[in-house]
Length: 132
Length: 413
Image (cartoon, rainbow over all chains, first blue to last red; front, side, top):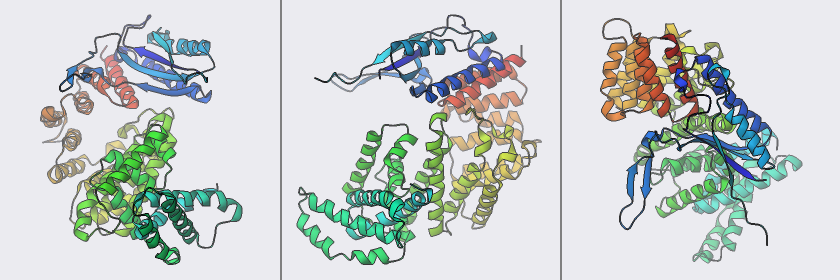
């Protein structure tokens, strides 16, 4: 079965640019519960391989090896919208199903219970070579 | 496999491994042989019944496998010599001599050898002494089984390279090595307690295993107050397991936990143990943490908590084994104390001293947020909670802190 990584970054969602700590507590709860339920659903269907959030990017580092000691610099910085914030890996029958799951994840509820429209990047994970 | 057979095998595994390593001194081969003997038992016993002397059965089978292993390993230079040694070893004797908890203890000391980092010592201990399968350990630490198998075999190699022998350490050495054994067991427990929702079951098993191993260590050295303290700490902490998370895995802080869900039998045992340990007047960090847990456990509700006593215990802890997290806990306790010397401002003052050591660590930010909230400064607290949430290193913590920020922001609107 093909595997897909569904990536979420720090770019603002289509329908919501308010940081979560400024939502109503009930809205925060609903959002958290949605994430739990989605993972539970995908676990039950046997499609979830992994789901992880990444920790604070403020302390992130870049490492580049060169001729001498590796060069270590700060960053990527939290302001950059392309930064990965978290991912799900799903093992599904086909691309259509991966897109369906991505659409579900994108519709996580925000303020007022409105679907946020979180951008979700869907990437196939490379598998084994064809037998020859 | 029935639960009975599984439990029996788990209990016997370290005894069998201990007996084999004691006789044949090669840890790596002995471990492989033990695993094969356990596998054979798991396959045969459910059908043919458990033999009269299951431990002897396993040791005999394990010893035969060990001899096979050594024979088939043509690359070994000392092959003939070792074969000769094996042939003369009296297998029958070790199969019938009484079980020795000292074997398990010596094994534990070997697995927590100082040449190993905790990342290696923990899985090795679980595998060799705890009798968890590599797959179970891998699941608990969320790594592929092959990776965990490598980590375990590298650990064994390091011990062999360091020239460590399987033997009971001399008393002076035992005293020196005990802290790393305790630390390993403590980390195993914490891995299991700080569970992430997906692997909840696998991790619960880790806590149970840590408690079981600490119990057997305690049975061997009941007079050591830190061993007693660690066992008490585990029991008192584990007693709160049912109350500390919601069904969905969200964290419930101590103050909000439903105390009727606390396990009173574990609390009673933990409290009894820590009281006995403290009378020996050789304080240590595990005893002090257990003492704090016992004070929380005796309060029928959060309001009844004896904060002055907890603050005093943390102060004692700071003097015995100083570390910034202890200071942070003391600050929170001091903030809850009413009257002179206590209150949120006094707590914040203590936290100010931690800036250099903990910087913007999420726990420092969260503690500071909590104390500002106690002092009635909701907006300051909300901003700090949001900051702490961004820096949290686990999802349940991040959710909890985000919610705290949202709650205070909503209140100040």
